[in-house]
Length: 318
Ligand SMILES: Cc1cc2nc3c(=O)[nH]c(=O)nc-3n(C[C@H](O)[C@H](O)[C@H](O)COP(=O)(O)OP(=O)(O)OC[C@H]3O[C@@H](n4cnc5c(N)ncnc54)[C@H](O)[C@@H]3O)c2cc1C
Figure 1 (tube, protein in one colour):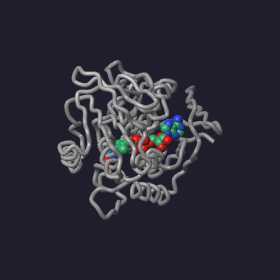
Figure 2 (cartoon, rainbow, N blue to C red):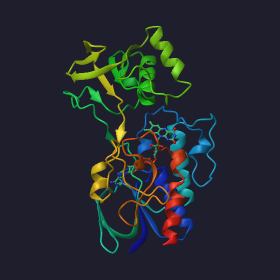
Figure 3 (tube, rainbow, N blue to C red):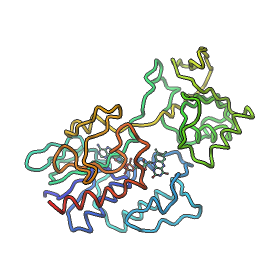
Figure 4 (cartoon, rainbow, N blue to C red):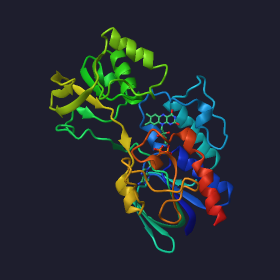
């Protein structure tokens, strides 16, 4: 069978694209390498979204939660229920390996081969950590993902980063009894820090409960320590664990293998038409946060949901 659309990625935006396709009587299949909404499933267990629930909805299906901002578990419930309601056609635990174009697309996965007239890449950015690129980064004391605080109780930990993920991890681990040191490259936290978290971390640093080094860059990591260049001084900190919360990036290799051009703008922004989301490859579209390249802070669920209707409108107009 040849589909009208194959969607790569079963995150919130991949699901939104499927629903829009179904509403327009187009045949569609989602191929997802993990579980449904795999990125959100892999988020820290106790994370809270910075968006309010109505901004995370798909196709105006209400997202009810008790607090204004939902957590990971509520988001998993919501997107799973929406997927169920629309009876989405999704193959899970099936990774897309190659996408080749002739008159139509041939999609090869870890399990099968499929054919489609159009492709939507909604592959997100959470699978590949943005590396520090320093000696020792691959040692077992370093993790680029944070799940929960319990394993770090009564341990010395160093958290690297200035964004929500770093600050959330630092505060949670501190409250579960870890001795936390924060390493921040710039002179302050990012302006995107959740407004209710900012005073908490600032006050913990002020009172000395969490030690923080600003204007500091990591030089190297050993099995038991991290060496940092901080305000022209070299400091070595003994530590049991390092949480390198330095962000994530799209799978550029995968995009390039599909033929998508990356711009030479310092962010490797994939080439696409912002009106239609079509890339330089005809009939191959981008949707969701993958579209930002290294600028992973410009697209969210709330502002990229609209990609679904942009793309399907364009496909329908052809
Ligand atoms: C900790 C954190 C908190 C966030 N909080 C918010 C928030 O409050 N509000 C907000 O709007 N946004 C938030 N975001 C950003 C963004 O909205 C989410 O990352 C969201 O999940 C993006 O949706 P998506 O569908 O574009 O991509 P994803 O949800 O990342 O989905 C991509 C899917 O593609 C799959 N995939 C990738 N490659 C392949 C392949 N080759 N074959 C098959 N499947 C593949 C992945 O397994 C994944 O399931 C947050 C991000 C993070 C990391």
